[in-house]
Length: 251
Image 1 (cartoon, helix red, strand yellow):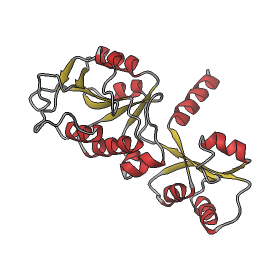
Image 2 (cartoon, helix red, strand yellow; image 1 turned 90 degrees about the horizontal axis):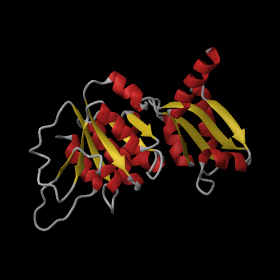
Image 3 (cartoon, one colour; image 1 turned 60 degrees about the vertical axis):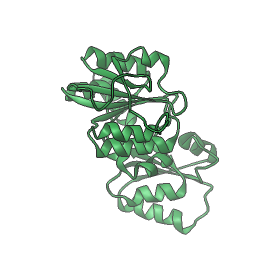
């Protein structure tokens, strides 16, 4: 039982970790004392340069673990051998949690669910708007979606560390779980007759944002409680998904 509890605790902890790479991104993160860091990784083939030496100095000052690996091992950690520049950093997303944890902690909420958002800049801007507005969490699928990366962190202007993010294996299954908890699920559609401004939103609301080019998938649309539209003028067909997220965040 103890071993099982320890395993679960470790799994929960490591589910909160993201790994970034690249010397500039890693150094910026190390210099930000508000970011919780688990471990700093180096390739043992790195030559001594001022930027890397500064990373070591900061890591030792902050009591951050430093690990050295051969190139192949580091590439498995960074998952981007061409761009990691011999360095990677494990960051703890303190606000990350499971959908079960979120539901246990929240009796009312507004959530943005992301259905196939691929552009890292869009993801970062969505997170920033959500953090600034009235959104309580983001549902982020771990497949067929952009993930937290240096580009996302930069686009979010660091707000990714302030926003509760719920990583899910299957968005459809997660939405079913939230529907069982009496959540109302809204999808955005240009064909919807209801304006997003006129709808009366309940205590448990989920807005689904679809793929940049194809919109919400049919499978997810079938789970929707209702569709809403953002009225357009002058023949404009749609807005960038990050702009849409911003409008919904400040309803």
